[in-house]
Structure formats: C-alpha cells, structure tokens
Image (cartoon, rainbow, N blue to C red; front, side):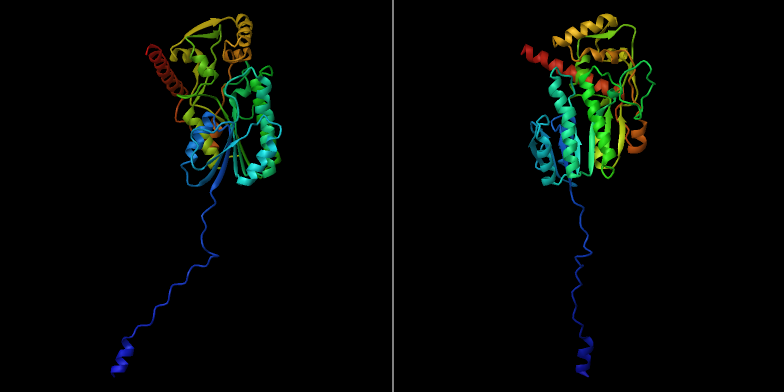
Amino acid sequence: MAERRERKGRTAPRTAAPRPSSAIRLKSPPRRVIAFTGANTMLGRNLIGLYEEEDRVGKILAIDVQSPPTAGAKTRFYKLDLTQPNVDARLAETLEAERVDTFVHLAFLSNPTHASGWAHELESVGTMHVLGACEAHRVRKFVLRSLTALYGPDPSNPNFLDERRPLHATDRSRFLRDKIEADTQVQKFADRRPESVVTILRTCTILGPTVRNYMARYLSRPVVPVIMGFDPLFQFLHEVDAVRAFKMAIDRDHPGVFNIVGDGVLPLSTVIRVAGRLAIPVPYFVASPLASALWLARGIEAPPTFLDYLRYLCVADGEKAEREMGYRPIYSTHEALTEFVGAERLRQLRLLRDANA
C-alpha cells in the first residue's frame, strides 16, 4: 500500500517545450539603404540628419564633394563629382557594393551661376550619369527634386498650374533649361523602368530661416526693383515643409509627379511690404537691358530672363500631392515669408553688432 501511494504521488518528468522551427521564425525586415546626391544642400543635410535617427534605415550614402555636417555613424561619405566623365561607372559600383534600394537626387543649384558650362555638366549630364548608374543597379526607388518654376511664367497661364502642364520655362535661361532636361530624363527613366517607384517633387520657391537662394537674396535688398504695371502672385514653401514632403516620398511609395507648394498666394507688392523693403517700379524696356548689364557685371542675383517672373503668373496647384500623398503644408506662404524675414533681420542685427564690436 505504501508503495502504491508513493507511485500515485510521483509526478511525471517535465519535457522541454519544443523550440520554434527556423522555418517559421519571424525575420525583421531588412533595413533600408538610402543614397543622396547633393548631400550638402539644405534638403540633403536635413534628411540625412533625420534618417540618422531612424532604426529602419541601416545605412546612408552621402554623395557630394564635401561631407554634410549632419553625417553620423550610419552615413558613409563618397566624394564623387557628377561633372566627371567616368562618374557613372564609379557610382554604379558604389550602389552595387552598398546594396542601395533608394536613390534621392538633390544635386541641383539653388542660385543661377555664370559658369553655365559647369552647371550643365552637373545638372543635365550629371542626371544622365545618375540614371545610368541607377538603371544598371536596378534601384527600387528614385526621388528627384525639381521646380514648379519650370512651368514658366506666361500671360496665358491659368490661376493654378497642375502637373500635366508642359515645362515651358524660357529657353534663354540655362539655369532653368538644365533642370527641365533633368526632369524630362527622369520621366523617361520612369517609363523605361515601370518596376521602379519614381517620384518627382516640383517645389515652389523655398524660404525659411536657413535658405539663401536667389529669391531670398532679392528680398534682402533694401530697395527691391519691380516691373512697372505688374504685380504677379507668388507662393512660398517653408524649408520644414520641403523636408517633410521629401521624407514622405522616401518613406512611402508615391510614384508620379507632384507639385509641393505652400498654402495660399501673395501679390509681389505684399511680399515686399512684409519683407520691410522699398519697391522701386521700373519700366520693362528699361529693366531688361539694365538687368543684362548688371548680370554680366555680377551685380544682381539672377539673369534678365527672370524678369518675366516679376511680370506674369506662375503658381502651381498642390491638390494632387494632398490627394495622393496625404501632404499638407504646416506653414502658409505668408508664414514661410515671415519666418524668413525674422531670420534675416536677426542676421543683419548680428552683422551690425559684429561690425561695431
């Protein structure tokens, strides 16, 4: 009886729980590898800084002639000059070695230059090199920075220009023509590579505390020339909203062309008044030869072809980006302008203080 009770109270030995089969073990998705040309531009610096903090991005390639200040542990700097004739082969090797899945092309000038031959090699021919490398490597996603200014100012323009509008910016401007060629090349690349996600973001004029493009310099003059009898509408995009739009295009798949603009428009007369500047009306027949002479003498920010933007409408419709990307700007056109004006006044106060120190 005692033996029977002992057996009854004895518990069966525990067996270890079966380990999950390696075949059903969940794997974390591979971390992304993103390459940026124009890594030292305003957009490049800010985007690289943001992706340094994101766990889902494993590696960042900064492609430029100088390393961006926001580069951290994830960023690998490649000193590549897009104007060099053999850069496409070197770039293709780099993309293959680093297994890049997303390429963001930001290597474009924000200000016109007198070195038009070099600018053409950088923007138009450089884009050809970039696309050749991306096609050889078969990148999954390609994002291009373009401009709404490429639609061109024209007296027959509608109130708002959508993405179907042809790029008709003046042929006399090398600064714009190179960018039109780059935009067109990327559209053709998208047609050839339907398996790739190709996104073109055309931004209106970007303003903000750190931006120093030709419009910012124009509005920083104490006296601002305008064309007599004209008061066109302008729209501005805050630099924060510009960075947000590109991050949305990189993070999610939004193939196609999108206008990225600030909310609302302002007449040029209001823009100048908010900036605290004095407008000086000049007849066009006087302004055109004067601008030509000043441009040759390096006395103004942009060539005379930009006078048409001071005469005619060139305002883009951002409805498609809102509908398909879910993008809405945080800052209005007026708020982007006032942020720039505030930063510009602080900058001038610092310059005055340093001069008197």
